[in-house]
Image (cartoon, rainbow, N blue to C red; front, side):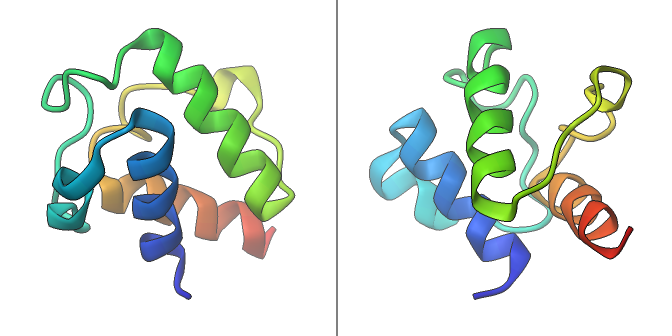
Length: 83
């Protein structure tokens, strides 16, 4: 499973998106577009990503540009995995 699909799966399960999660792709906007994706959900999603990929988000890495789209979040995770 690729990073993007894993991110979609995490978002779908963490946010309880059900079938709406199936429509998520790399260009899908996150912040401001998915009502369930609020500040509390960001914490939950970050924790799930950290667990799944065995990476850590630094506090200064959690910003709007990382969470702009599914693709930007996936790219960020790929960058962390390559480091």
